[in-house]
Amino acid sequence: MAKQVSAAHILVDSEKQASEIKSKISNGSSFADMAKKHSKCPSGRKGGDLGWFGRGQMVPEFENAAFSAKKGDILIVRTEFGWHLLLVKDMR
Picture 1 (cartoon, one colour):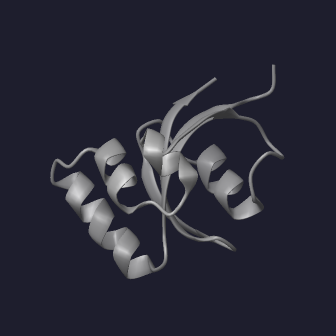
Picture 2 (cartoon, one colour):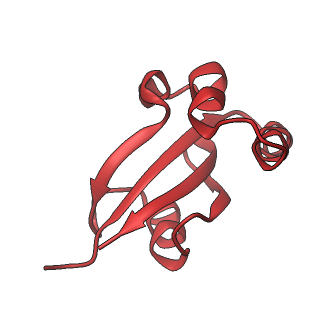
Picture 3 (cartoon, helix red, strand yellow):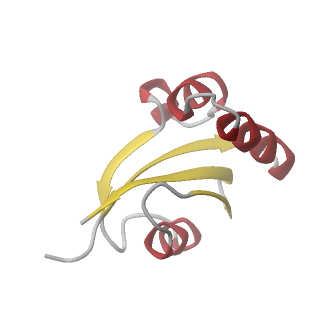
């Protein structure tokens, strides 16, 4: 089976907003709660969960970040859609 990543994300308009939310998460706020409150993506309603995906299913910047990260990492990634806080939940 090809490598897959389980991830969640929060989509916002600016790097500054992404950094502020990441800071709140680092200080104990729940990623899922922050996604529900701030994400512009419909996945925000379910805590930003994107489920499992393999290569070729996401835009390249997002996918490259997801596949190069470690489980539990929270990264800030810019794509054509905006700024994402990307949480790598698991890998298989």
